Length: 245
Image (cartoon, rainbow, N blue to C red; front, side, top):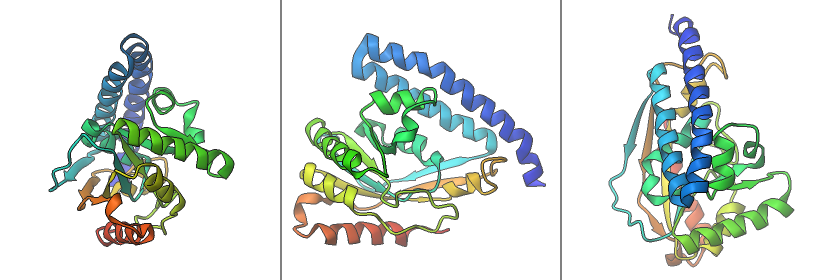
């Protein structure tokens, strides 16, 4: 019965999703070209809030649990597991005061209204996962940008989304580069749960009544770990211990 109901609601959701992207594409352009970075960021933040509201059509709820005080005047490296594309907007909204920037696959940099524009012009980095000669220098430059401007780099070390909530092994090269290029950064591990249930049936229809949770764990200073592999192991263990497929 629930899956049957999800068909019309998914159609309504996709219409709202598309309208939101089409509306905010020119708004982002105006924000960037008329008001610079601040104008673009405000428009992107509002877009992501609207995209979250669109998910309410499907009965989706969000909870962001953070018991830690994290200062804004420092670079952050936010490390998360990845369950669906619906991880992105909530992270962008909940972390907006830290100016989150994403490491994304290069394919997302074109063809998607608003999303592609935001990735290309908002400070995120687009990498070709099949081409280390492009991706590694791009992440290095991204790490330097994070360090210099006190932004938050958001990275999903699994490299791809988990289709059933079970985490995949971390790929460590991107983390190693960020640690090297942003040595003063604070690492913020976050466990994401239930996002995969929004696409439990595939791309269509979407799952209903999903409660997506984000749990922020104790931040760790990069500079306090001489052995960076020890830091990576600690982050991976902490995140995975709090994932409940």
